[in-house]
Length: 293
Ligand SMILES: [Ca+2]
Ligand SMILES: [Ca+2]
Image 1 (cartoon, rainbow, N blue to C red):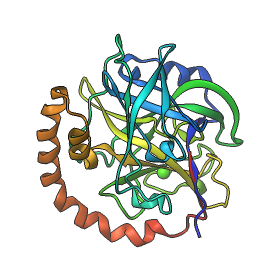
Image 2 (cartoon, rainbow, N blue to C red):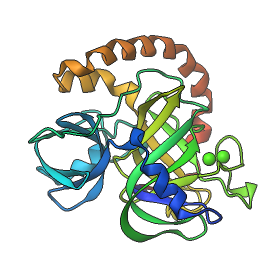
Image 3 (tube, helix red, strand yellow):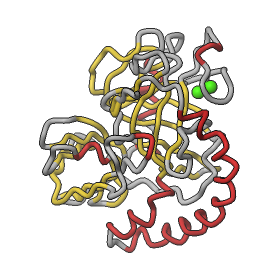
């Protein structure tokens, strides 16, 4: 029923300069995103969340016994890989595409991302950061250049499981017919996830603070080709939904403050899920192709 593609780097608007997306990715608040290549050879992205821990996608660990995380030109091996126990590779829409990789040595000189513990993502602008294939909304992904790109998209969709998984659509500046979620007008630096972006980060900013709110999981399409062109949609797991699991897995006191923030958010967010669940059936149908990146 559903085709699925896991994600790489990103596609961009055809009427914008690639340099603007490359520059956005260079901002210091996104410095925690690097590349993650598993021992089987599958290449994606990952986010440093503690000096020796990387958060990525569970599907990045498929067929792998170890991996390499590369950031700022330095590569680090792994000492263990922990996939989220609720991840189901047969159903990307069920969420939980999260994996933790412990590095064999700590990373110095890069600030780990701050994890988002709240439940106010919907309607906010997400900044998606990863490495992978690129192209435009007209062509879809077609170029592998291993560049770090960032694009922005409004977090305004879901796939029937908003408690664990959010979505954003690639709006077409020339046609509202490609609109899937929310408003049909694209952001200035709108874009879409592509193979290689898997395990990359979705960041949201409140005031002067930027948080890691999501991990990029897949691209889905209604037109039968999940090639990250206009009208395709991105799925990304909610970091706040798995904070307790992260904090149980990473025994470092640095994340302790985030635990309480996460629990507070969980309680506050429960009521909101009831309203959102009404749109589940509608959001679930119609995706002809889904691809883990
Ligand atoms: Ca959009
Ligand atoms: Ca839209």
